[in-house]
Image 1: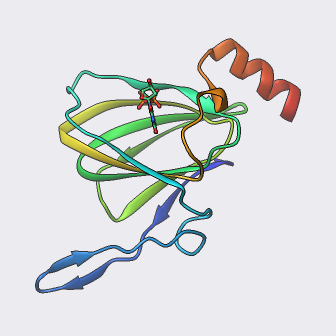
Image 2 (image 1 turned 120 degrees about the horizontal axis):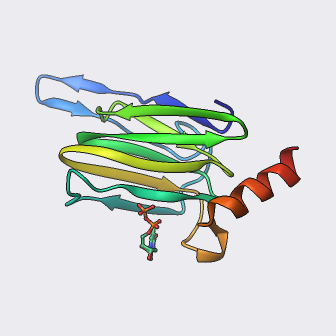
Image 3 (image 1 turned 90 degrees about the vertical axis):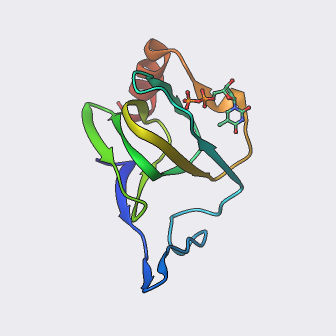
Length: 136
Ligand code: TYD
């Protein structure tokens, strides 16, 4: 899907375990300005229900698993994240819903900019309107 894709991250393995380095603009398509993580999520939680106008993000499931439904234009796709070896890149104007959290997930999110509530679109109808205006 345009604006949403899985990135296979580097893994450096040794007998002592695995290490995944992530460098902004090298391993992911933007400079990292903010990092946050989501944890302590009840299994039946459903999060997200928003898109961003400018923000780029990569979601990485460090422990447990969850699913993300992404919508961009007329496309919809469900991604399952269950490995720290993959990141889900989510670009601007992707409506995302995170659900099916299992096994006490820890979700690391890398973001291209500081937190800015005005960059969020939290109303689905407004999201569809803006997408239609911008992308036809
Ligand atoms: P939100 O992005 O809506 O989380 P999710 O989509 O995972 O449900 O953020 C939840 C709340 O946290 C909201 O009140 C905004 C706040 N927040 C910050 O203050 N700083 C941040 O960097 C983020 C991501 C959220």
